[in-house]
Length: 335
Ligand code: BTN
Image 1 (cartoon, protein in one colour):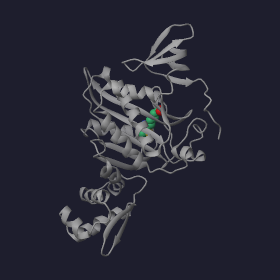
Image 2 (image 1 turned 180 degrees about the vertical axis):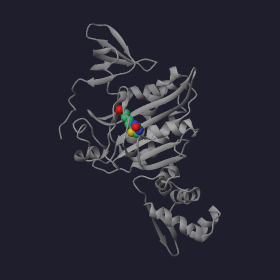
Image 3 (image 1 turned 60 degrees about the horizontal axis):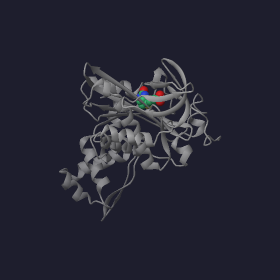
Image 4 (image 1 turned 120 degrees about the vertical axis):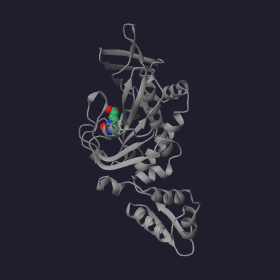
């Protein structure tokens, strides 16, 4: 393990200490905590010290014991100690990587289990959809990739896009209350500005998806001036929209928990919810895909995940990939 990853990534015992602090209703006495975890008081004291070094503010008072007051903006153990389902039970956190998707694909190829998560503060070669780069301000965005081992055929794989993008929207809405919506195929939008996106990559064999990586890039705490100049006019962040600096760990946990829940849902239920939060349907759009550009009314998404568009000449098209431009809406506002 590199010095960067051992500094960032938790020990199993540190995680147990943190979980008991998270779950405690009030303060926990050092004696009870050490006994409950089967460790000595001095081992507990060291583990608390390590957690404090990593940014957890833990109050220790004689007589009452220990209480967690504050968690850092991003930490592997903060995510692992908070998730409720199978997603995020193992989290690898790096200060900087080329791409969390790249790393996750490599680890998945080496056998990393379903639900393993990679997060980073910065990426030097962030990947976006359609071969575009993904740029984000270091420390200001959630850069997260989740390894999935779904039991599905490659033909069913578009479902993963819907499942993961819906989970992102539901998770962010739950934490922040922001009116986040979906633009086909998987952009996360607030109004007409892009809050984030999703890139799914996978390895398949005939008849089966071996593994997939769902990579989320979400602008969390960047101010307008901190958004990369190339996206400043079209992007937004949770801080810009809500005025609050949400913790990236909290957003990550909410998304991971939504994925865990969504994996238990039927594809129809996912698609129904997705459509209800989608800004593309029922609007005049232009979609640019591999087969050219179509302008018309986006009226539905079929069971294969294709966008159905009725063009101006009345011809109906089923589009499986591309970029959508929405006709201007009244909600578009300057800033
Ligand atoms: C898009 O183009 O809208 C999708 C962007 C997805 C970016 C994320 S950031 C974390 C993960 N690692 C990557 O290299 N890409 C995804």
